[in-house]
Amino acid sequence: MEILLQPWAWYIAGPALTLVMFLLLYFGGNFGMSANLRTMCSMAGGDKFSDFFKLDWKNKKWNLVFVLGAILGGFFSSQFLTNGEMIELNPNTISGLEQLGFSTPNNNYLPPEIFGGTTLFSLSILIGGGFLVGFGARYAGGCTSGHAISGLSDLQIPSLIAVIGFFLGGLLMTHLLFPIIFKIPIIL
Image 1 (tube, rainbow, N blue to C red):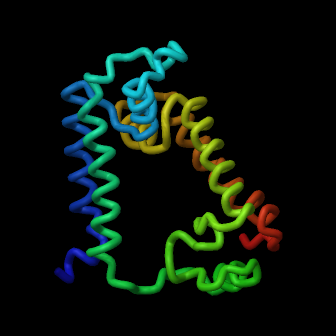
Image 2 (spheres, rainbow, N blue to C red; image 1 turned 30 degrees about the vertical axis):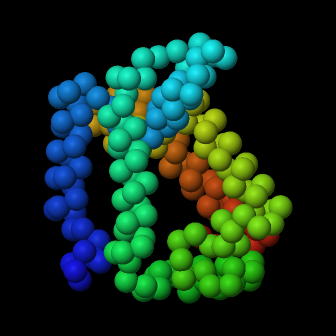
């Protein structure tokens, strides 16, 4: 059981991901989470309101099983495969987050000050962030997992451009916008 609580080595996880991508490319599938939202909207009757949702969702059922597996896998690993260790963060990062009012920044990956959903501020961050992620995934023609894993495996130039944009957006958010939103000095 102890081995399950450790991250998988690159020489196990990398070939496993390569095998999945090879099988997807061989069978004509593609990988990504945001496309599943379109499939779910199509299943729920979204095609009555927008042509964007007019698609044969029955051919996409396998991808919905993937989403269910990701949800169940995340729940299973968080409930049964965590060892309770503190997250290793730079002391300067911990100090900066504590100045912002984060009670224990290295205790969990989802700080309750942002993801607790109990204040207007945290709700606005979650809803605004969700909207921006959804808009960005639609504007880029797919999400980070779809472009970075499936698109790059298929050697698609638009996916390379999208992945570069995702990384630049992440750096911009981390080093410029996050300090403005939470009123902390920039720590590079």
